[in-house]
Image 1 (spheres, one colour):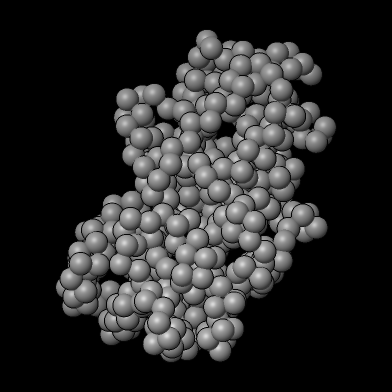
Image 2 (cartoon, helix red, strand yellow; image 1 turned 90 degrees about the vertical axis):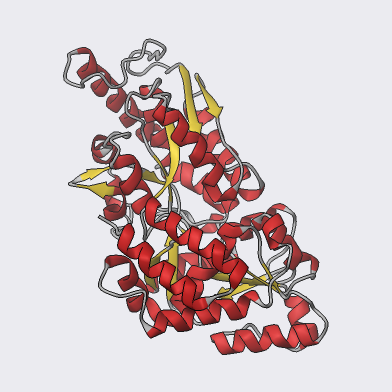
Length: 433
């Protein structure tokens, strides 16, 4: 990474010089930041905020921190990760800190409306065009992704990965013992679930707390509607009161009949563990689940297998984790150093094989990735790509919150008509703008 490091030093020196000369505004002038001369060692610290605290997620972050420590041994990495709720808890803490004008230097945010509709709209993060130009990232980052992290020509985050949301995980031994193949259509899926239930498995589809039910819900929407009508719900060209949505809600209600009654008390890892243990046969979850499976020592095609969620074959429902640069970051130069590693091939190839995701860059070293992730790389390159609701791509935070409230009520009532009415009202109240 000598060339990367050299370019980084040039970036830091130029940007710091601009600040000193008055060309860079007030950003990044905090006295606690200490930077050595060009070619020397940067010292100081960088506080990075995320929700990666367990399983393959935490291990992947530690792997990328290891690359950072090698490149910048003089900078202390302050890991301010907060656990729980697929980022819900962390984002609540982050929002409080931002409101109090106490930002971490860099934080994790999903590409899409979560990033643009929240942090960019509130003018809380810096444009990173200078870093993309310096590192040549536009040549290696997906064209599909750049518009989702940009506004008015400015790019606002460094994507570190691509995750797939629409994955059906299964226990191959349980399926073989029941004489069941991995289902491809929704009807096949329901038949398999009913067969397992008739055979004595009370809850063949493992599910966790409410955000995991939203995750299941978005995959059923895609499976029922197809990619064009699914996308139309989010761009305003489709309507939530259409018959296809009604069918999707009915399909979702059908799947809930096969889930565990204690779902609200379980994490996504707990739900995955039910599949590994054979207490359940299936789980719908993003491919970070595979990172967890490998972290606990399970072996692909022995302890677990996978396929697209039935009805979604040929579609890649995606999300992307990325890191931003806070406006008025307390340690701006050190944060730029962190972002440079996060966007580098070395950093992403250390992080993603452990995390259970594929690199955002298109030049990752395929020899480092396992069987599932290689299949995900191939599908990302060839499938129809659509965005995730649960993980920030297709809807702004206000809209997603309205959907989450409606979903919570539906989980209690199972009233499809009331749920659809609430979804129509949510789309009208909080459209993407």
